Image (cartoon, rainbow, N blue to C red):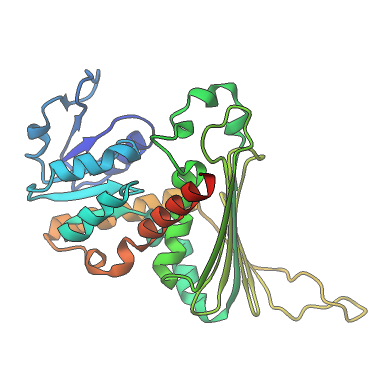
Length: 314
């Protein structure tokens, strides 16, 4: 099949490399409204990529809504990178459109982490996610697109945190309670560079999430169950247990590792997400999640949080 990709750098290049690995993809055409893309098969004519069987929107977040509107009458399949849109009027447009050939790449939905959370849901007590690095202390950050209030109004939460936030909301539905806070710590900061959110879901699972552009590099996903612990990072997944492990004096001690899986959870998730999309396109099916209310729930919650934080700052 012939794939059109809107975007060519950064994550778009990573997505492109993943699509190229599939035997289902025979050709990729890149679109940019103005630039000549040396070394790539490209076009500056938007109508030309509409001849493709599927189009990938991998351009910056703030451009997604415009491209989705331009594709309103497109009959092929659409793969749209997260976050779908960053304005309330655009989420209303998506709700009305209800395109069952439109797929949003919240890739952790199809990950080993998602499988683990689903299989362990009845046993989970707490989920703790910390993701961060020191971008905010680099002088170049002051001119970085991640630090542009018009392009990334929610900063680190929008760029790095939304995948994790979406995964929990998608699996466990809208939380019964939610608390959040944001800070700007970077000396070059214009938008949110530290964001925390705590949620309690209907199944009584409590989740605490923290995202930062002003911390040492860390990517930790901890799941506390009644009888086990799961520790997930860039090296893979480790399972510890059982709960009742004691020292010679009968005191509780940390349980030993029972099982370890060496896997890059993000690479694994991206591979599975692209493969899932291509299989749907190949079989000319519809995306079942597109009809679910939870498909866009995390984005709607994101926009509500954004609106609330804007009110607080007035």
